[in-house]
Amino acid sequence: MSCNSCPPFGAYKFPSCFQRYGGVSNNKNPGNVQTLHSLAHNVMPKFYDGVELDYYHRLAPNKFISAAWVLSHVRPAGFRFGGLYTFRMVDDFMLTPTIVGDIHPTTLAANLNLLYYPFKPLRLEAVFQKAGEDTPVETQYTIEWTRPCDTWTTNLYNVRNETGRCTSSVMRSISQHWAIGCELLVEWNEPKKVMSDLAFAARYSHHHYSFAATVSRQGLDVSYWQRIHPQIQMANMLAWNRNTRKTIATICYQWNFWNCAVHGMIDSDALVGFMWTKYLTHLPLQMGFSVVMSLPTDRFAFGMRFVLDPSGLRRGD
Image (tube, rainbow, N blue to C red; front, top):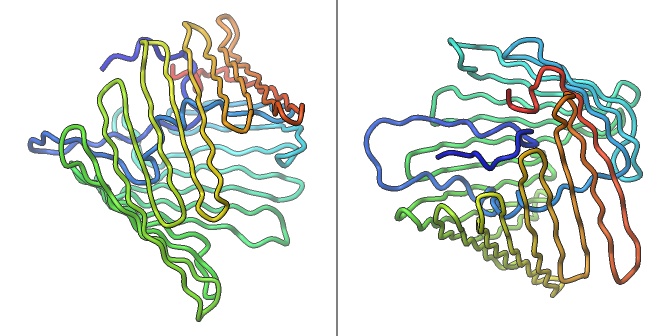
């Protein structure tokens, strides 16, 4: 499928790993339950807070270094540096394990991500995050088994003897357009206190629109995504929480131009947001700014981001 309408500056994260399987299947892999609403969430603006300066430099096809400086009231301010390294390469293909990380040299706050495919269908991933010297390490472990028509996933969050959370989910395609799944949540705060919950998920999708829903005892999430034009996407989202008895509806859009992209949103709480990003033609610089405003309180937040990438890594060259 061609993607001529995509903006030239890539995405904010690494693309998914594509796998090839033998045989013939009329159904497609549905992904996992965590990414059920990803099409709608990707249309939402990613709001910046304050000023952020990023630098990326590619040392080799399988490794690059990065640096960032943030001035913000919400995010941790200061300077960070890090990078990505993939251990194995065969011809032009990068093979895992892959390490991604960064560190704040003053506070020693750090992030570390380890990704490994022992063989094609199995994904092992570990994420570690430490906010400072005196804070415990936040951990997340993922084990995912992918087959042509279904995906089995287990996530472990901050698993310790006293506290922890675990989710196990399965998502399966039952036709070319329909996919269903479920997720089991187990959480414990004390050795004698264990809480569990079960959620059900379903999605109906075509190449230009998708409808997804998740329901459990805690609430309901519904999303609808549609590509109304080769360069325009629209998304509607509805979330209801049973404990707070609160419902939030959101409408957002994404408009891609040949050298920039515009995102916008408005929700039922009268929160209005806008994001604009552009990759300059003659300079290896991506720039963007965002504004989010609460109409009932007349308060707003403004942010800017600049990404300098001489090697063209963020542009996908």
